[in-house]
Length: 322
Image 1 (cartoon, rainbow, N blue to C red):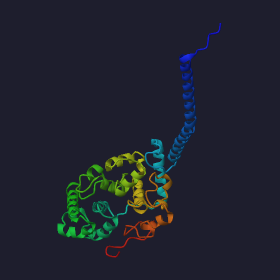
Image 2 (spheres, helix red, strand yellow):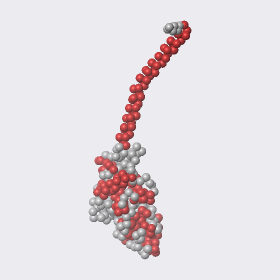
Image 3 (tube, rainbow, N blue to C red):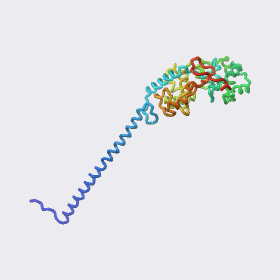
C-alpha cells in the first residue's frame, strides 16, 4: 500500500523547507560563478608579478635585495675578471706620488692624507731639496717644515709626524726605511695603508692599499660589505693571489679617480659596467658620462709632475702654475 500524501500544516511546512533549500543552493551557485572570474584574474595578477620579479632577478647588473645571492666561486671569478679588465684599461697604472727612494715615498704618503696626490707632488720638490735624508728632516726647524708642507693641509700635525718618523728612522733603523710591515707601523703617522704603499712600491712586497677610492669601489662591486679598512683588506686579499695585490690596488684607485667617482660615477663610460652590481648609480648616458671623466681619461694632466714614460697624459704642472 502506498503511503498517503502529507496534507495540512505539516505538508506545507516540508514543502516550504525544500523550496528554501533550493533557493539557497541556487544563490551559492550564482555567487561561485561570479567569484570564479575574479579569482582567476587575481591568480593571473599574482603570477604576473612573480614573473616580473623573476625576470628582474635574472638581470646581470641587478642590485638590491631582489638580486639572487652570489656564490663564493662566482664572486671570485667576477672579481678577477674585473681586475683583468682594469689591467687592459690602465696598463700604465702606477703609484701617483713622485718619489725617488723609500724615504721620499714614505714622506709623500704621510703628506697625502686628506689631500690629493697632485698637491703633494707639487709640494715635495722643495721639501726634499731642503731635507733629503731622515737625519736632515729630524733636525729641521718645526716652523720652517710647517711652512714647506702647508699646501697639503693639516700641516702642523703632519710636521709632527714627519719629525717623529725621521727621528725614529735615524735612531732605530740606521737612517733607512725598514722593509717590514711590523717595523713601519711603529713609526709616527704610519698605519697599514701607508706601510703597504711603501712596501709594495719601494720594496716589491705585495700589499693592498685601502684608501677612500679603494673602499668605495670594492663595496660598490660587492667584493665586501665591511667598512673597517683592515677587514676590507683581509677580505679582498682572499679573492686574489698575493702577486696581484699591489697592481690591483693601483688599478682600482686609478678607476676610482678617473671614472667611478664618489658623487657621480660615469657609468655610461665605464668599461666594466656589465660586471658592476651598482651600475646606474651614476650618469648612464654615454655622452654625458664622458664629460665626467678626469685626468688623462678626460684629456687632462695626471697627478704626477714626473709620470712614468708610458703614461698617456701630460704631466701635472708645478705649484702655482695651474
